[in-house]
Length: 286
Image (tube, rainbow, N blue to C red; front, side, top):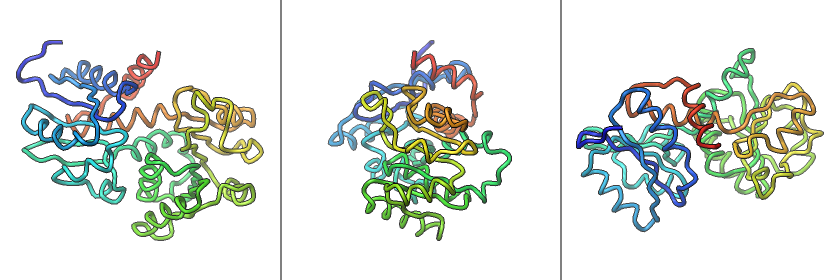
């Protein structure tokens, strides 16, 4: 690609950042769309975050993504927040335009877009979704689901206090939409029985825990969609268990894809072809 003084700069910032697939995705999308732009991975420690943002403001930046551990801290350095990002209290995408930095959170949108075509025969107003875990991505997804208008989001976590805190935050903005569940067999069993979709938002199933699962296979039914936010490995133990039962499964790659496509649209006004984006991500994984 030809890089000039007019080339618009974008980036993903975090610590660590080497594992990010975002440069693979966005540079490919810029090239395909004919946009004169370059996307960089930038590792930054928390103590240097303010200086980095000041630097972005005097460069030809169009925006940037934020990953761990800066999604909350970044807010203090922005000029404006999208209403949903403000409720979530975390930002993963920033648009820099006309001297103003505006923060968005596209994680929840990514999740919703990745399930829409799998639940076409079920009205969202009747969906009950059980989420296992209580990390940052879970918070974004749970709040986006409440905002989208599902019937109920159930948060199950080993530390009940964390689940209760998140459920209370959701209910403050969307009354009655969330409930906290203890990660114990009987409570989890009842919640799973009413869930249309069960989501793993824990780290169980990643490389060092590849044979472990956060949910007993006996609690899965063939009518459910079992969704694992993990995308490497592509098929986790939870997904294997679900497939044995006959349930539909999905990993986190499409969530990653669609949150990135929305960020691209916020920056450029172009919503790219999802298949192209998925191909780019898969190339980055191989």
